[in-house]
Image (cartoon, rainbow, N blue to C red; front, side, top):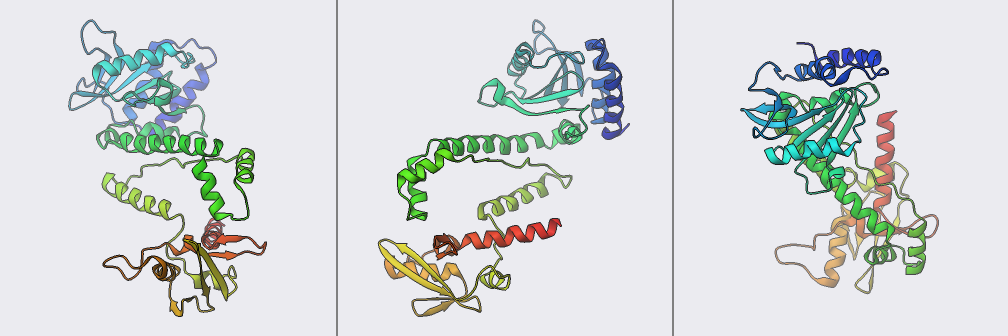
Length: 354
């Protein structure tokens, strides 16, 4: 059996030969473009327990071109059109969505042998938003091999599409919510920004948000070949890193040694109407209320405890010191000290790239 890469290269050549004429037709598209890809993906197109053509749930139903089966149950429907046919025609997607709904199948693909559009038929959104990924075999710049590999028999067994779809669906909802908050100058956002930029009034902040052009992007999550167990562990670790935003092992001493902080550095924080102060010393220690701490967070917890007391079973209130303490930058404005840590991490990432 040819590898997927080899099969896509052959199909790409056939598309180049026949794509301009648009005379290939649906049946020839299936035989010369689609079925070679299915074979390379590990599907035995001659085995009815794996692949059924003109599949019907009930005898009176209209058929779908291909049903890919696991344990004799359909897992993915493929609706094929002749090479060059317009896949934007809503009739096609509505048709295959109807097939999937009746059969209880979650995943469908609409293709003309060159472009493949993958949809999640069960997603509780409008049909256009059910689209997960779209690739063209003829476009070597698109990740056709990676995307089509998700339709392989092995990947379908591992439910990898479901893992990726969940992340895609969540990211899209978060993207929309963030965009709405930013574009609408949400009152809670204005309050948060005012809290961190005390010299600005709400009107200034709203005007600035109206001028802002914020690009919110989420990286495409890929599944590697390590298997679903290791992948879930990797995703969990990646989630932790995203939540923290930077590497958690960066210390104040790292920032001082890199020349990003020039100790001593005075730290301040107005908390519950009172001004708290601390100082970063040359050795990376943090002096606060007569004591020296080895971390910003312990110093912040100690400072907060002087006002709100200590919770049961703890020495200090749990506090993220990187986001708690502020220092005065060269321009005279107060900034959370975490901005320095982020600059350090970005610099380290650029060095790794170079």
